[in-house]
Image (tube, rainbow, N blue to C red; front, top):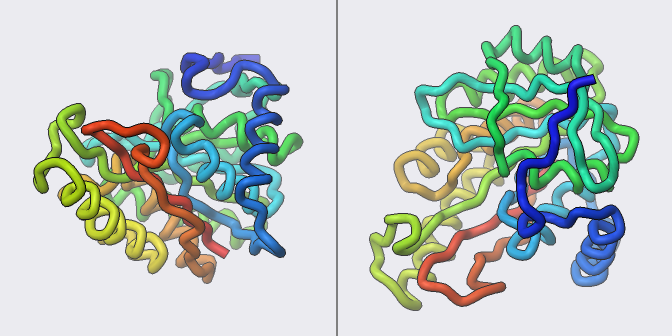
Length: 273
C-alpha cells in the first residue's frame, strides 16, 4: 500500500488524535448550531488550524455522510492541468484515510488530471477533519486550476453523483492575501485597507460563490486576487449548480481576528445544501 505521509509541521494542525478531538470539541462549543442544515458540497479555508480551523470544521461537519469525500485543492495556475494524488491512503493524526482508487481513476480519465506527488497544504490541512467527521469514508484528492478545467471537473463530479456515486465535494481556498508579505496592497494599509478586503474583495467572491457563479469566481480569484485557489471553489460551485443545491455563507473571518499584522488573509465557509 502506498501511503502519502504528512508533510506539514505541527504548526499547521495537531499531531495526535487527542489534540484533534480537543480542537473539534472547542469549536463545537463555540459554534453550536441548532438543527444545522446538511450539504453535499462546501468551500472551506486551508490556513493553519489556529487561524481557520474552526471555519473549516463548520463546513466539514455539515457535509452529508458519503462513501467518498472528494477534496479539491488549488495553488495552480491557469495553464496547469488538474492533478490527483495517487496514493492508496493518506496519513492523518486520526488514522489512515483510504483513497477511492476507482473513482480517482475515472475522474483522472475524464478530466485529464495528472499524478501529483508534491506537498500541498490546500488539501492536507483538511484531511484530519474529514477523517474525524467520517471515519469510514474514503477520499479522492485533486488540485484544480482556475481555468475551464474547473467547470469540467465540477460537471464530471455531478455526473458521477447523478449516476449513483455516494460523494461529497469539499473545495479548499483562502481569500484575499493582503499586505507587504504578499505584495498586494492596492488600498494602502490600516483600517481602510482592512475594510476594503472585508466588504469588497472578499465579499464579492463569497457572494459569487453563494450564487454559484463559477466563471465570476475564477475571474475574481485570478484577476482580483480575491482567492488563492479559485479553481477548486469554482468546481464545487458547478457541482452544486448541476445538483440543484443552494449556497449558504456560514461564516467569514480574517487572520486579523486571531493575530494583528500588517499582512492578513481572509477566510470563508460556504455550504451547498
